[in-house]
Length: 217
Image 1 (cartoon, rainbow, N blue to C red):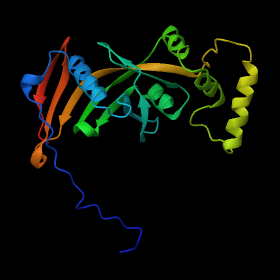
Image 2 (cartoon, one colour):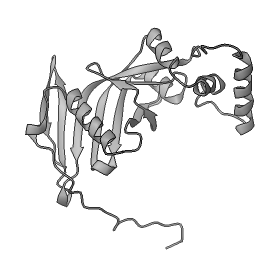
Image 3 (cartoon, helix red, strand yellow):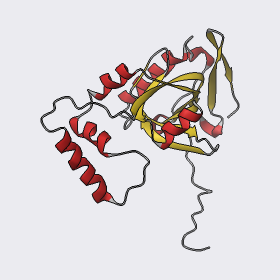
Image 4 (spheres, rainbow, N blue to C red):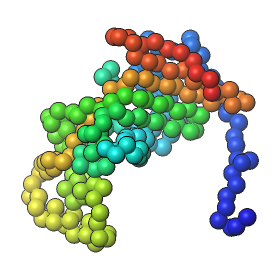
């Protein structure tokens, strides 16, 4: 075996922090998500709003990346990004996507299957105005997912954005900057249990409501 090989077969941890029973479910999965999100925040989970967003590009190739959740309600889960990025191009071709919240310290994860709907420009501008000025300038400097010659090119683009908006208090969002609400079709709540007999309870949309079922771990 070469020094570059890593055998992780014996790497495991027993999960025993708690369980999830059918009696713990709420009629609306977003209410249970809100409860779990608050518990992750109270437990000190680092960036509990960090989620993996998985998309498929026009050629059917999947890709995933971490994105920060910026709000959720009965409609779905909101995030903002450059719509010309790889994820934005994928969502334009196929709005179906998946989210994953990996709350490892609580031995929990939440999976969301749904479709992304572009947010109105007014909502995008309202959120962009709340970002730090440096982040707003960075959005102008970086054409996300586009190749760059090196770090110096990014620095020069940022300096150019600073000069462009010098003396401007409200830096507007670039045309390619936008946001989405992921409308869920299914939400799965996963809680680790001893012996790998984990709890997996999933909500699936049915008409105007939801049905739930338990999945084998």
